[in-house]
Image (cartoon, rainbow, N blue to C red; front, top):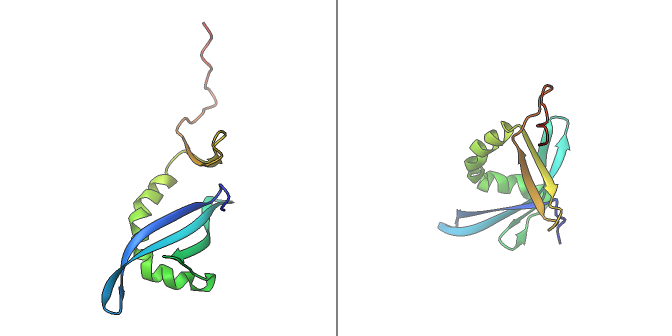
Length: 115
């Protein structure tokens, strides 16, 4: 069982195998990693269908199936422009949670007085 700080990306492809287009499911398990420049993801495991792919072959599989990831480039650029995004654990369900904060506090911000 995976820890709640992991996410699984599943994409469906049609790949040429022996002259036929076969449907393939590509699964990647990633975990968030904080770096000095923000956050990134670390690839933890990879599967194609029911087959676990050994780490030394991840690059080969990514070259074959990775074009599908180009669909997410626009989304990744959008995420980079957000003021604050956090990955956290939901207090009630303990599931991973993606939180977006759009309020940017300023030095001169005041708290409304109570009535």
